[in-house]
Length: 339
Image (cartoon, rainbow, N blue to C red; front, top):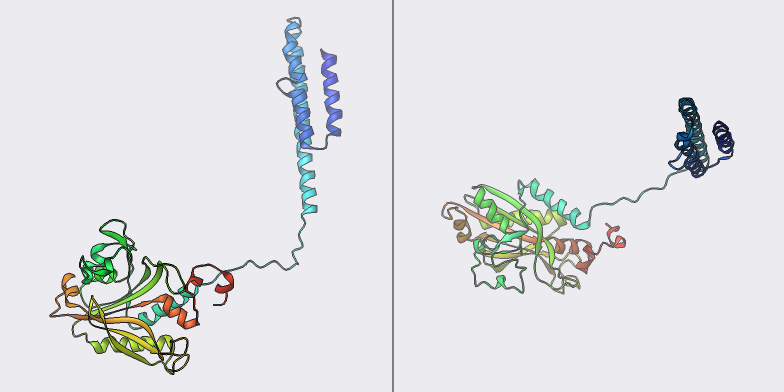
């Protein structure tokens, strides 16, 4: 057995010198030191030795095992070092070579113009109000003077989740929520996403953005509304912007009006952009209906207010002469990189 042990020691030493990879080293370990290895087999055969020889032979076997394990660990460390040196040579970097710039993003054109509009109204003392896009029927319709039989409740125009829960069709519900929680004076804008059951085409989308405004205080008049919106138009389109107000009807304002801006392409003469009219509609507005104020716990005899709402996509399309609303949502970098 001693001769066999010395033969194993010598063979392992020789093979370690020839071993060039970790896989070869692992095969060598399994062959001699594994559970079914040659050295393990020697230990299992010690039962055939005389009792007085077993301790001496056992100690010798353990000595050889420790020696071989240490030799294999040393070889593994040498292989790791050689592998690291090889990789350092093969993967060497020239730090003086200019790097490749990573592409970076920027704000979407809708976000750019929305931020500009926010800044205009913040500069006039407005605050920003935000709220849920999944809304209650009461806030979206009833509290805005649109009873159960109002045509705006048609399922062809509105995404209903249940009979009393829907995706908001406008950001006007935020006006009601603000008036319920905050007593006058109130001066807020409510930007956000809204939803209507429209087919997707060049001018329609089931998802778009609105910005609603609300002012409530004592002595608020139509002249305050006109002055505010005229200032907004000049800040947005330039001091040369000319606006006009046309009578209109909204259920939640009385009197109501629509605001047009003189076509900045033809100067009011009529062109393709303004469809020959010389004017472009940009928003709807009016004095808050007394029923809306009363429904929110505000005395219409003491307070009055005005409200307005504009579509963000419409403003941006006219700002950049974009003729297809779908471009905003297609994530085409060729389009987005222009802004």
